[in-house]
Length: 498
Image (tube, rainbow, N blue to C red; front, side, top):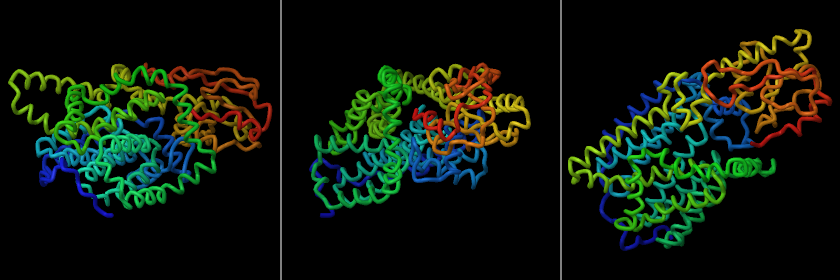
């Protein structure tokens, strides 16, 4: 059966026309601002890792599927091996996300004003600014979730079950980027079963969508199975290490991710599905279901943030109606709130502040600090490296505590005379160990002093010179005379999944 008859409460009227000019104006400004600021601070630690993974293309990595490393490889080859070149990908993904949310507003009956307001609210939300200023798996995942929501809304509104095929395609691609998609699918399934229309589940197109998703995902699943599903190990570690903090900060961070002034808009988006758009309840109620699952499991608050964009799009049309009928006082209050929210969002999400004055942004967005001080860090490592006698450097090894440090040295190190670094963190563990012939001194960066290393002394501590308290600030750099066993023997004990 190809098409299931829509429920009686499904909107049958033709959708409003797409507000092409104002929405495109929003994305042009968005792209221009993101591009202008893309190189202001510098590489993020995760971007170094994506570059390194992109040089070692595979169907999977310890903590992620392949799509983001593939994008890092592709865009640096096309646009140059620079932070600006890499971040062209993030900008384009952000533009696509804004267009999709505007289409969601249209799908829910939003007119021209509702569509461009949705586009602007999406582009300016803290969550989108943070995730599209730099490339990350979240940058891709946000587009995946919003696209899934758009296709699900179209399926539920029209009853045309052929949309299951499009949903399956997006699920397959999304799972090749990050394994959060099943969380949305679970919430959506619960919503459809609870609120309907359940008729969309009685279709062969659903099975076809599942087959397509599995076909696209098969190479990634095979890789994960062959490596004992390390993604699940990493997820368990995140929950164990950060679960309490994630639960405590969940509600405050949800308010930060969205423009605070838009909280009534996205909340009204949920209410609207009970008053006007009963067919869309399953999508709207996915958000509280996802939140409950994350609170139970200790998942990160931003995992649910994409659905706030969807709810904002659904609530845009009634917000426009209210704005048109509101008194001057309420309009003024709304304008002031929007201005304050906009300033906070831009300061937190974009590199607007001087590096030395970035503390306020760092308080709400730790990723700001992880874009600073990397050249200085590698200079410090190089200075210690030169203390190793030249005759011993051919047998010496640089070992870092995490993939960000290893990636920074891999990127900046060659021009400073540094060799390929090693790390037991995430997939860097799979790209090691050093050869057993490297039986000379060991430069330990941020690593404790395991029993396998001898003659260790702290030479210096990293100082980014900016007063920014990021993960590398104050990190000890130690020099050891050697190891107690060959690297092939001690390497398994150095592996870290989180």
